[in-house]
Amino acid sequence: MFSDLEKIVLAYADAMTDTPAEIPDTLFVRLREKFDDAQLVELTANIAWENYRARFNHAFGLESEGFSEGAVCALPVGQNP
Image 1 (cartoon, one colour):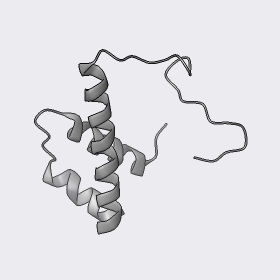
Image 2 (image 1 turned 90 degrees about the vertical axis):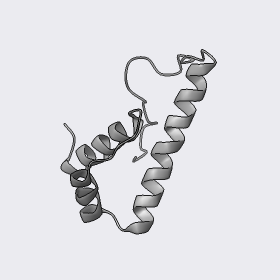
Image 3 (image 1 turned 30 degrees about the vertical axis):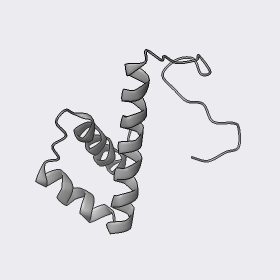
Image 4 (image 1 turned 180 degrees about the horizontal axis):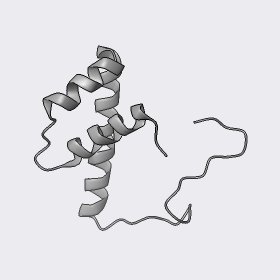
């Protein structure tokens, strides 16, 4: 259900989330084909920030507040992602 671009980004996020974070050269080549330098910096920073937040919350035992049920984050009607 994901586009090819989304699959590449998800693979990158998965690789960045591993400990230690090791990004295969083949994956980085695919990312460079889709994103310029500034976009890669922004993508990497956002993934790193979300990893930071997840690890911080986990360390303190913080869980979901139940604002959205299930495994989705619903958008208000009429908004595009």
